Length: 92
Length: 152
Image 1 (tube, rainbow over the protein chains, first blue to last red):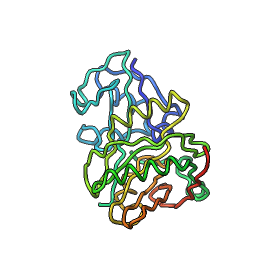
Image 2: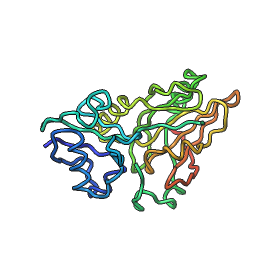
Image 3: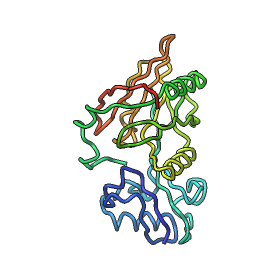
């Protein structure tokens, strides 16, 4: 199963773990498994219309899934998936 | 991502908070923001989340390339986050500049603050001399914290 590295804000929903292993052949399936296993994460990663939240970045190893097949990006069991919040702001 | 955990969003803890860094760290942040001008400059801070001691300042690209918005390059964040974890550290904050306003978090800064455990450093280039302030942003509440500059 691929390893999923969690950002600090989501660790509280996974018993404080910084990484977990969940099933899935695509990023979409992995995020669904994550939300099923840790219901506190529901709604924070994928929007109601089934797209990745604007302020969430997901990497498969070193690759940003937004530049691949987004939620359809295929995942291998040996992959490391990293979920990171967008770090943004400004004076606007 | 939203913050619903009271144990990670403790306004009382934020009030007693302080950020500890070296004079070199301060200089690096200011120099980076000055070099980025007229756009906002930004970067990440890594260190010990238990003691709020900064071990390194990471200068990153502002993907927004704007005088009013910043976006830390997410691929840089990934690289910095991984390296910090391997070194037994963590990303503990972010800094960015306000090119024409005071060093205080804007509504955008508050709305988009990614992590209630982080330190949010603002570098204002409004006046001739840059001014630097640090804050905690927890559940939408802004609390200024002291910056302790010392030998590290």
